[in-house]
Length: 52
Image 1 (cartoon, rainbow, N blue to C red):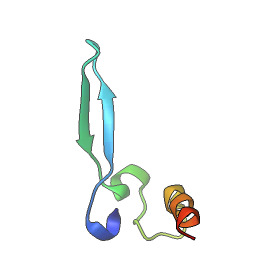
Image 2: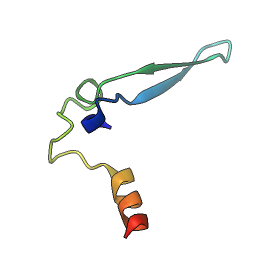
Image 3: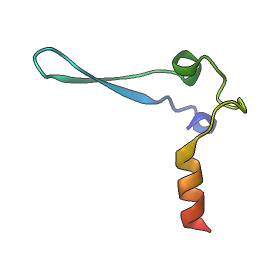
């Protein structure tokens, strides 16, 4: 996602059960840069195994 300049989407549920969505940057979410060795992107591992 980060290499394509895409931001993660988050969902919120309002009191009247309306679903809203928004975007948040990885540094805002985790406090780390996308390329930090302290972040592990599990979905990449899963799909890498499928492609092998």
